[in-house]
Image 1 (spheres, rainbow, N blue to C red):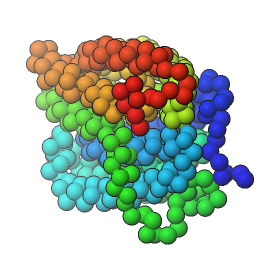
Image 2 (image 1 turned 60 degrees about the horizontal axis):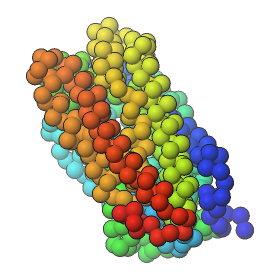
Image 3 (image 1 turned 135 degrees about the vertical axis):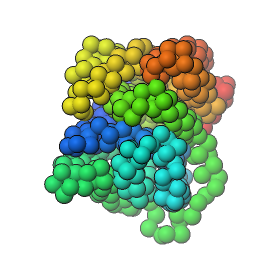
Length: 466
């Protein structure tokens, strides 16, 4: 019966074919997701008379957005990883239970985040670097985003599961729908209706709401091998499943939480050494760099169901092969980002602003921050593989080492040495270099262990089991 069995092609098709089949929709979806955020920045940056400060206000919200993302990945990534492995083991009933748990946990975390954010909005934004000039813009944008946070959590969580359960094209289509509809609604809400920054946030939440409605309809189809129950009582949290899911999602959760902490200190240091415009420059640089990072994440999304399924099915040669191919492509993507950052920086940042001072600051920051950008791809893919295989401790360590052990101290020390905001920008290539060496050591160890395993062997000798 159509839709009643898991796509076993994950265990039999050539890995290169599968990676192309699963990664291309993921790349398109993640690129669209990055453009989704860029569209807001581009339209906001061109609001007459306030564009530069509005972009700075948007940058102030990044740490808070990272916290929201961290909570979403804590629930969503763990559930998607468990589901892909359970489908490899053909354990459909438990996979469906994991899905219902994800929905409930996303609602709970979404409500908590919304209440905390709305109750302490101004103090939180000022702590993240908002000044009297940028606070109104940050508040207007973040208030709407916080009110729609439950929708955001559920949409991204279910989208991840759709992709992991063998339907990457639908996941891609929903993401393309949100970015296209957002690009259409943004100018209407921002300029035509005169809502400014608040209009961009309304357009964002509205597009995600429409995509979520379709995702819920998809998973309520009882004919699918993976579906949500119609009985509301079935959405009660199973704490055993929740614990396992949250444990797997802890790595990316801590990574995003660390990003929040790092961006907090980046904001504070940039305001200290360069003022509000330096903060706006970071907002632009972050958006541009994130485009390439999201493409690598698209490759990671393509790798996840392949690696997870084959690890569950104990086909280790295929796990090793998909990792090596994904790492290669991640490096190629980041090299392209480096070329643009170093040689086309002025044109790239000019998309976001007409302010000559802000454009100069952003172009300089882009060149300095992405000095060793090519090595980021390999680092991201390796960390993601440990997460896919349920090796939580290693995934967490690799996620946190770059940001907390290396980047954070550099952000504090280098500006004092250089006596300028360049110290913040140069902190990135230094920390990236050191952490990539450590990631390489971990990667070599994993590849050697995978090479020693024969298909069908017990995976416990790898030091971690899902």
